[in-house]
Length: 333
Image (cartoon, rainbow, N blue to C red; front, side):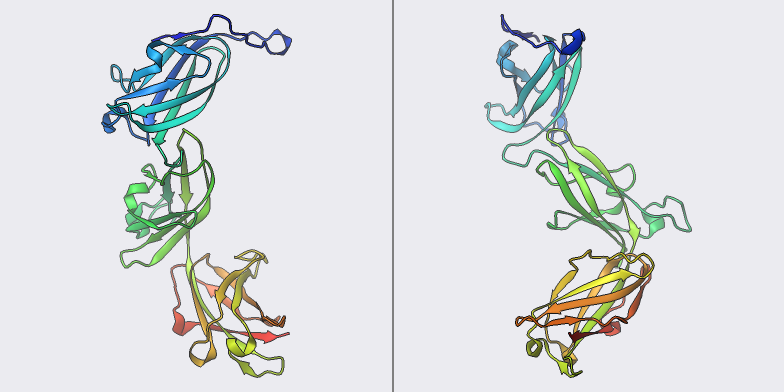
C-alpha cells in the first residue's frame, strides 16, 4: 500500500541545513490491548492523515498476512497528524484514536484504539510484595495473599485473584482520560483481612497503554475515639459543642510527618455510646504515631487535642477493633 503525496507540498527545513530524510510509516494497531484475531467485530481500519491522499482512500483490512497494521511508503520529512478508525463490516465506527508522528527516515507508530465514546487510554497494572522470611520477592502464597482489590481515582473496587496481576502478570484498568490517576491496591488474605497496601499515581497516555507496578507495603490498623471537654473540663456531646466534623491525623514520632498531610482525615461528629465516637483505620504503615485531632464549632469555638496527646503503635497485620479504641480528648480552646 502506498501513500500518494500531493503534487506541491512545502516542508520547512530545520536550522543549519541538518539533513532530514523521507521514510516509510508503519502503523501497528491494537484494540483495547487486543489483536485483530481477538476482536472479530472489527473488519478494517480507516487511516486518515490530513493533507495526504492514501491508496484505497485509506481503508485497510484489520490484518494482512498475520500483520495487524499497514505500511505506508515514501513520506516526506516532517510532522503529521493522524486519525485511525476501527470499523465493522457495515463500516460502523467501533474504535478510534488520534495522534501525531514525525518522519525523519522510516518510523513505526504503535497505537491502541479504544471503543468509540469511551475515554481514550488505559494502563496495565501489576503488584509486588515486600520481602519476608520465605523469599526476598515472595509470590502470592508466600505472602499469604489470595486476592487483590484495586480502585482508580476513588472509584468502585475491583477484585482479582492475586496471581492475575502478580510480578510479570498484568491486569487492566478501566478506560481513562489521558493524564495522572490515583491508584489504590489492597491485598487481602483468605479471611478477607488486609495485609498489604499501595497508594500512588499512575500516568496514562492517548493511544498507547502504559504499564505500572505497585510495590505494596505491610499495613496495620488503629482504633481511636474522641471525647469532648469544655474549657472548664465538662464532658460534652457533639450537639452541645456545636460540632459537625472532627479531623484526625497521625504524626510520625520519629520523622514528624503527618499521615494525612496538613488537611487531616475528617469524620462526622456523631454522638455514640458513652458520648464518644470511634474511627477504625486499616491501612496505616507500621510505626509509632502521636494522634492529633481538631474540630471547629459553628460559632467559631475551636477544639484541639492536648500537647501531650496520646501515642499509638501501629503493628503490621494487627487491626484493633472498636472495643480497643484509644481515647483522645478534644478540649475547647
